[in-house]
Length: 112
Length: 113
Image 1 (cartoon, rainbow over the protein chains, first blue to last red):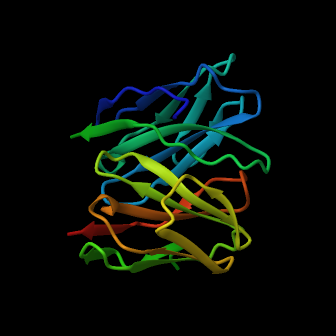
Image 2 (cartoon, helix red, strand yellow):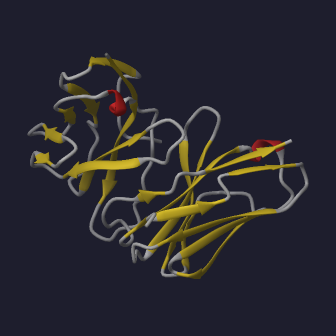
């Protein structure tokens, strides 16, 4: 079973920041938080991941709370092309056999 | 220069037939996966191979047989297809077991009639 909880859907106005929350209250010390998204009819696309520090790349920022029980994915300037289902996943790192277990995700709709 | 490519993109076949889906990655990754996405959009792992060796087999019926001729290829053969096998099948790869993000192909939509 997925170890994360996300809202089923969210709306965001084009050009505004999209903040997608994720709860992972049972996360273990060696588990990373990964974010993927799936645009309609395509394969899931990796966005970002982190362990405990906040992370930023060209696609998004990841804010992880100090207790690591929740995180927020931030798309700073959402565009219509960001409309997708966003998945938050926790996964052991460092060579273990952990694999991605996808939950239901959050369907983000970016509106003009 | 597609990183993970699957063929065919669409596959329509009748119950009882045998079919194969091919997957190739040009990322130099050691680990490859097959995921199934059903009509409710849940993505579930089926198999994981690391350097041509089976690592994960998630209680998939033995009608499904993955084959990895080399670490860049992981094909999925399905015998005696059933209606419930209709789904989108995604191939993915990663640098190693539990290492780095997965890169997914664009899926194969299998329809069994």
